[in-house]
Length: 365
Ligand SMILES: Cc1cc2nc3c(=O)[nH]c(=O)nc-3n(C[C@H](O)[C@H](O)[C@H](O)COP(=O)(O)O)c2cc1C
Image 1 (cartoon, rainbow, N blue to C red):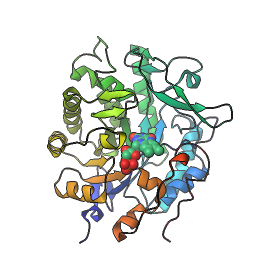
Image 2: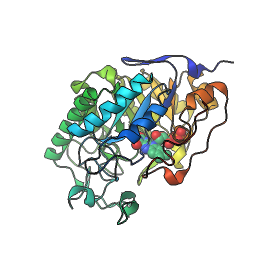
Image 3: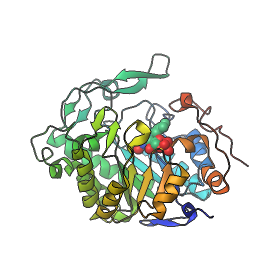
Image 4: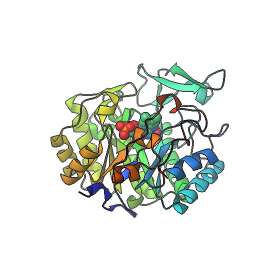
């Protein structure tokens, strides 16, 4: 039987030849100083150009938005030039690529910010770790500090950064942008009542906690066009020290999905909790999300092809994004289509380093 994953699908302004997408994957190999995308990254993305859509690794919209060593940015001219070389090469190879716009908020470290504390919704102590550059230049895991609460000026500047990053992504030749609203990073920190204890118009009821996420969406849409903008959310689960497992979190997700649904976005990317140890989403919750957000939904997180085919068939998702399988299989779409076994990923080379475990996974031909 031909898989329904190989039927075309349209995400906003972009037509995809099939529904097997490459999930955003931080690999920490940009060139310092300046966090510039480089030729090694270009080779890695070109190898994966057979994906229906590549979503780039998380790409910080500003130096304030950075939380890990050697992640690429999209705020300087040099970075835009680096990305341009990558998007051109992906297009030449027949692919399509979205930029994942990232602000980590509190999942960061003062060493990235000249000794200043990272910003978040509230100045709450929490337990999480991030990766800085160690004395030997390699990755070193460190505890994240208690962040400072964003002021009105911080929020206004952050929204400007989203706007500028979108203009840059467009100039760099990306087909789409994906706002990173998931995994306990800044927008999720504002959305969750666990990390947001504010008493201004950004705190309290979900309408207020969702405000920054929706303002960021509106700023990004304003800087480009709704049919070029998607967003990734993970309202339920445990990610980066943010535990959102109560009914409140699921309801927050539905509120956000409905608000996003009104904005005619290119897609909603749902990062599901099971791969990070959380509970699997129920089909009932998926159906509620689909009703709230009538546009295309991309599912991701511990998917098998069987699960993806079943959920596409049921009309609960429109496409699937694979993460770890794409790290180890540059031609994953071909392997799925032809039923060929996968290479196994090596977790030791996920973050940082060079070509080993990055561009040296074999393709079939
Ligand atoms: C090494 C690694 C890096 C990741 N980086 C990102 C990222 O930059 N942005 C993001 O939204 N998710 C990121 N994720 C999550 C993946 O996009 C994906 O949701 C997760 O791997 C689950 O899918 P899988 O079971 O197919 O691997 C990362 C996951 C891994 C393993």
